Amino acid sequence: MERKLAAILAADVVGYSRLMERDEAATFERLRKLRKDVFEPEIGQHHGHIFKLMGDGLLAEFDSVVDAVTGAVVLQQRMCEHNAGVAQDQRIDVRIGINLGDVIMEGSDRHGDSVNIAARLQELADPGGIAVSQTVVSHVKNKLGLHFESLGEHRVKNINEPVWIYRVVTDGIAAHPSRPFGRLGVIARRSMVAATLGLILLMAAGGGLAWHFYSHPEAPGGPPSIVVLPFANMSGEPALDYFSDGVTEDITMALSTFPEIRVVARTSASAYKGKAVKVQEVGRDLGVQYVLEGSTQKTAGKARIIAQLIDARTGNHVWASRFDEEGDNIIALQDTVAARVFNALAGFKGEIRKSEEQAAWGKDGIALGEYDYYLRGHQIFFKYTEKDMAEARRVWREGLASFPNSALLRIKIAVSHLQDAAWGWSDHPDRDLDEGWKLLEEAAAIPNRPRLVEWYLHYIRTPFLQWRNHDFGASVSEARAAFAIMPFDSWSLADLGGQLAQAGKTDEAIERIEDAIRRDPHPPDWYIGNLGWAHYLAGDYTNALKVLETMNDPHNLALIATLVRGDRIDEAQRLMTEYAALYPHDTIDLWRRVPIWDEAVKQGWIDDLRKASDPDQRN
Image (cartoon, rainbow, N blue to C red):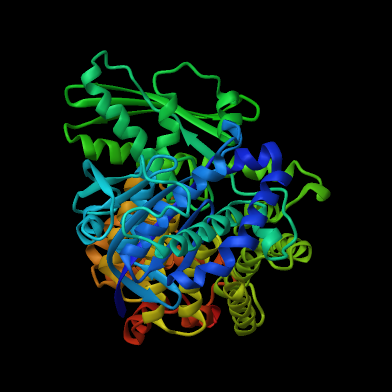
């Protein structure tokens, strides 16, 4: 594992969808001219490069933290100049966060806490502002003529230790590029170019501009967007505002981890705190399709949180729920509610996904975009039958014919081939796996992939590396990379846990699946099945049986094998007879193909299943 010290800059555009919605052509022309005349020729001279584009955000790496801070300041100066005389509702504002630390290098990508902290700092910056970590301040305070205002210690999601945050004070610094501030001189101009080109690419990735820049067909539809309005404190005590603010922030940060949703930053949403608002006006002002609002009520040892999701386009309620929690640990309460709201709204079975799938099926063929085809196929895919898998693939192939440069649709078609091979629906499983892997490689070669595609690539490579390549080490690396991008979705957590178990990482698998079950108030049976499977593969048959016997549907191979281990052969044989009638494609030949890291463990599992079945009828 290769590491290096690097300055990471995270940036986010404020109100981009709103600008595009109000005047797409003019916005595009402004950005194209900036990119052509200034940004593209200069970026290479500043020694920084963008390594990830994520919807409305970007991540850039600099070898010098001085370059990173210089570029950020000059970028904000130039954006201030660019906005001079521009109407408030047409301004382009950017938030920037910068951190310095150790990063893990994986090809052109970068991972690790340093990257995560930079992204969290960006979320805490003001529009047009820059937030930096204490590490950054200690390295540049004597090198640049800048002042840093302390914003105090903050706990940020997924980082164990609190982070001390500073705001870069740019008030009073000359804005014109011919008047460089402090000791920056010519370096400042080069930094501005690097960071501002990042802004242009960021905006391109955030919507239809990406297609213009890279000659892709333009898609009229795209991932949905949401704003979490500040939750109201209904406790009757202003001193408890911190609790409602904490719930709002945790829900915002949790939703922000799901790559299929664009979430308006907390600082923009905070402008609505304490105000009576009309949801449809909020939607127009911020350019979002959905608005989440709610309230908190905290008393000794108890908390009640009410939340409702509204479609800002129609004003209709999509979902509403009440969460009653007990406990005095405020942070734990906030995390619990945030996780449950996330899994109700986001994720592969959330209310936003359901609403968007219905909208996609309500469009005619002319109006369908790349994302609409993706959603249409997904609704069919989750029925998990041989016929529906073929139909989902047909929908995605139809979309790929219209959007031939789509990495997203290639990945989904690859998944359908994997499912055919894994479920015994293919006459030529090796050929299906080869075709799927080829599509994944094509998807990986398409540049400027959004965060949703990045997540899918890691997520789907995991089982392909197991089923096709038998490379369990690489599959674990991909599983962890997927988890780092989307750590809150219970569906993907439970699925990744099952794959980790097959790769021999049973302790981590159990941890992930148990987390998925905690986060989902109504976990489906297969979550329980994956948890029992992980215990079985770990050789813990007692706990495997305790878990698996709580399933609503007992027709599960892990349960059957565990019953054999417990000398309950009659029960195992009865369930196997019923299982064979339900799943006639699931034969011993298919069991032999199931990827398990240890051949001895795999053979023991197959022997258990053979004891529960008639080998003459199961081959």
